[in-house]
Length: 209
Image 1 (cartoon, one colour):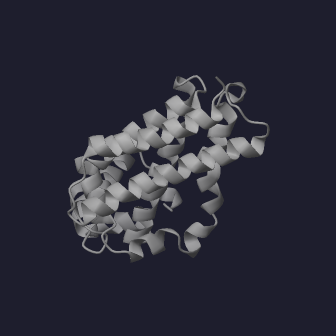
Image 2 (tube, rainbow, N blue to C red; image 1 turned 90 degrees about the vertical axis):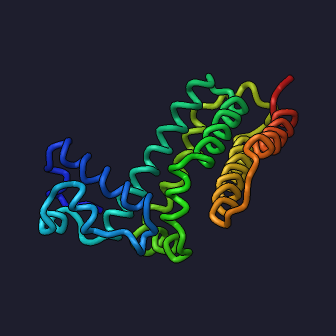
Image 3 (cartoon, rainbow, N blue to C red; image 1 turned 60 degrees about the horizontal axis):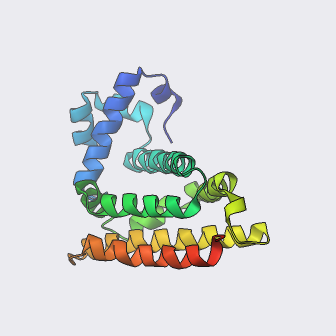
């Protein structure tokens, strides 16, 4: 994670550095990404970079962590916008994943994660202490969904529903990711039809009628 000196920088300079770094990682694989290009675009001396971050991996993991936090905010805002309707939230979330999956930014992510070992790096010893935080979106959903609208008898059943949704979401993300990475054409409308069908099945089972 960044050194204390990074957090003391003016907002504009911090944002400029992060924008340059994210662009570099989106346009190149992790291995090919260059600190020299980052500092050139951010207009900072090379020595300053090492006052803010240990190395390329350090700033890369900080970007990953930042997007993780944005995802947490996304879950909370969307479930609130849906007034606690978990199935409306599921469809909205799936639409976002599908739209993002076919965007240019996702193409950049495919380049970023083009080497399998990059995934291993993200969940290395340095990140293991944060794995528990990855469960936070499930906690947010559990907190804000309208439990009275569900045909369940216990919190465990609600958690099972949330876990099923999480599995569908991850499956969808990696399907789009892997197919795109391997150059396989993917019809977004067919993908949407499939996941909506899965959500419809869950709704029939879990929603009170």
